[in-house]
Length: 386
Image (cartoon, rainbow, N blue to C red; front, side, top):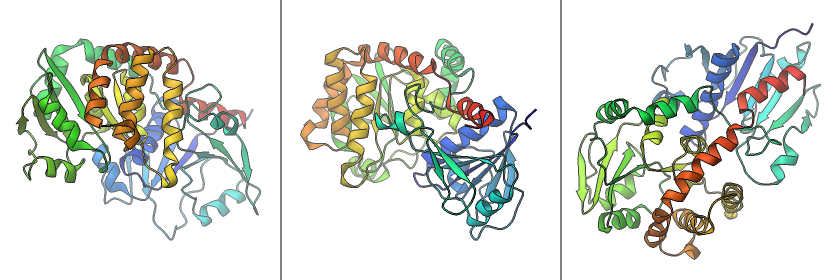
């Protein structure tokens, strides 16, 4: 009988701050909690992780949180515990040479997966699972592409996530207690509650102006440190402190704490529309099954535009044409595409599509949940030697 592959090492260099940290932490935590694995997370920047996982000490060299061993990745890499039975290299971070050499000395050699960035592009289906031999050592790593089809590696989704979401959305007392803890009033019946998480380049001012001058009451919840420059310019240097409300016309802006990951899920579940960015919050917004807006990570030469449209093409199956057109226009405008027209007018069309998008969000989330989650897929593939 084969020896169980119990020891897993996950390596992560933080590039997109909370996105990289969030994805790798969720993966490590799920592997430990749901698959009873001995997981070590190697990360070079624990300051970002500590903001979204309060139990983490940003200054510690080694620690344990939620059943995961966390080690600071310091170069030059010192000899430490032997390599794991399974090694996850997140986002092409490049494993330490000393560690790779140690992997080659193991018998059997560890299973080595390269966890890639999420993409909905068609080519991903054919690239998932391909092997890349090491140029000089008896090692090979396999590409693991998160994605939206059964031909890919799936998405991170914990057991019981939908049940927790549905229970929270049914429980008014729990929701009100959550809002109170954040220092904001519970939503009114005629209010549109929006969470906003974006990159600094987002066209924030015209959207905020449109909400202030619009017909619908909007409460916008912005985590501390997000879009500070744009928000400061729009507010005339009067960014509201945590617990304060900035009211302008029909718009109320609230600054909320930067949330731990589980609380961020609750924020998404409790809002009517969620603006998200990067990868981690993008996936969590889909599990929330509420209308959402994606600020994609911009890349040189416009490489990100095909990725944005590839997702919309997959997401749009079963969505009314008018709702799709409104979504595509606003997403493009929010991401800086001048051809999409004014972002404030694009918002009006998107808001009208809200009911259709809400129903479609449930269908989309359930469709995605019909495929194995990413962590379970990795465990199965590692055990099969694939």
